[in-house]
Image (cartoon, rainbow, N blue to C red; front, side, top):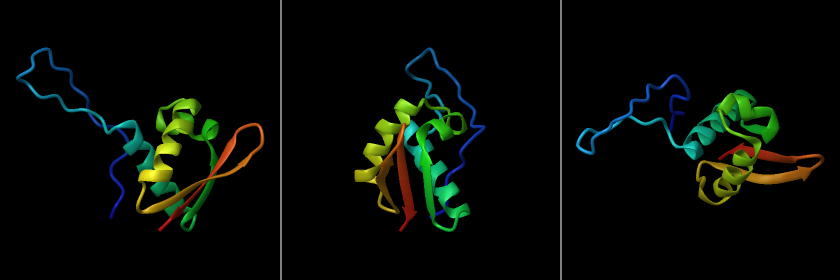
Length: 96
């Protein structure tokens, strides 16, 4: 499975219900794609703190923490775990 495109998607807004809008990927999907890409670049394993990747994915560190908890249960192509806590949670991601 190849990572999905992470940035630069066009978003349009629609004022009528009959015209579908093109939406950006969900926050969870955007984060998962980012993690897959970065883990692949690092040899399949990645350690990070949410506050250090927040700008890269366009999310707050609080949003990243909540989404990481979801990914621990829903991600099938990578292992996600809380690795340690020192001033902020460090997460470990390993591609399956």
